[in-house]
Length: 343
Image (cartoon, rainbow, N blue to C red):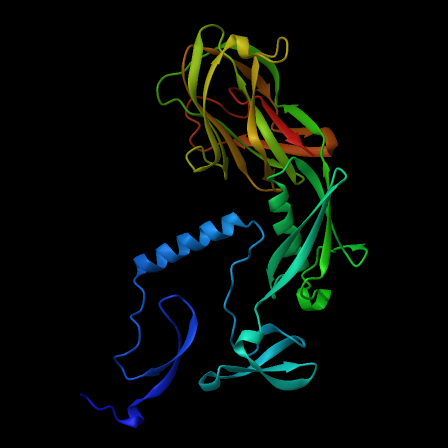
C-alpha cells in the first residue's frame, strides 16, 4: 500500500462524472477522470434534448463565484466566500453575511406563467436564471409563443405590463413561484407583393438557385412565401427559409415542393402560397432569405421589383439581392414574389 503524506492531501471542489459539484480529497490519483471532448459533447446534446422538451427550462449557468448574485431562502444575495469542506456558501443578504448550505441556494428562480389566450387559461412553471432581465423574460416567452398561432404577446407583473428593461429578477422583485400573466391574441394575416409586373418564361436547370433577402421594420411572424407556378407541366424542388443573406445557409424551414399551374390559389396571380407548418418569428432589422431550388419546366416570374415596400400594419420591408442566387432572382426580377406575415 502506498502511503500518502498528509501535507500532499488537499480538498478539491470539482464536478464529478455526472457533472455534479462535489468535494474530493485529492491524492493526485483518486479523482475521477476528466471527461473527454466527445463525452462533454454527448452531455451537451442530451441537455439540448431536455431543454427542447420543456420550452421554458433555462440551462443552469454556474455562477458560484465571489460577487455573483444568487437566491437564498431569505432573498437575493451576493456570494462572499466558499467553505467547500462543509459545503457552505457565505452570502450577504439584506446587509448581513450569513452561511447557507449549498443545497438551499440556487442560480434559478421558479416562476409561474399564466397564459390567457382566446378565453382559455393554462399555467406553466419557468426556471429563470437569477441574472435574467425583463428583456430576457419577454424574449423567452415570445420565442415560445412563436410556436403557436398567437401573434401579439403582453407580459404583466403586479398589475402592470412588464417593462422591456435590463432590470434583473432582484430589481423586478420576482421571487419563487410568483405569477406572471401572459396575454396572447391571434394576429391578423397580411400579404405583400414586391413586383409590379409578371411575365412568363423563367427557366431552370439542375442546380438552379433563386433567392431574395429581406428585413422588416417591426417584429412579425412569417407564415409563408409565394412561388411562381409553371406555365404548363410540373416544377419540382426545394423551398427554404433561412437566417442571414445567403441562399447557402442552413434553413429555419426546408420542404420539398412539386407544383403545377393548377396549384394557383388566387385568380391570375400565377403564385403558389407556400404555408409554413408554424409561423416563424422575424426580428426587426435582421436579415432573412427565402430560397427556391427548382427544376423542370418554365415558370412565370416577377419584374420591375421594389427595393422597399410598406405593407399593412406599417411594416416596411427592404429587399436585397441574396448571396448565392445564381439563377437570376434579384430585387428587380425573378422568383419569390410574395411574403405572408402575421402582425
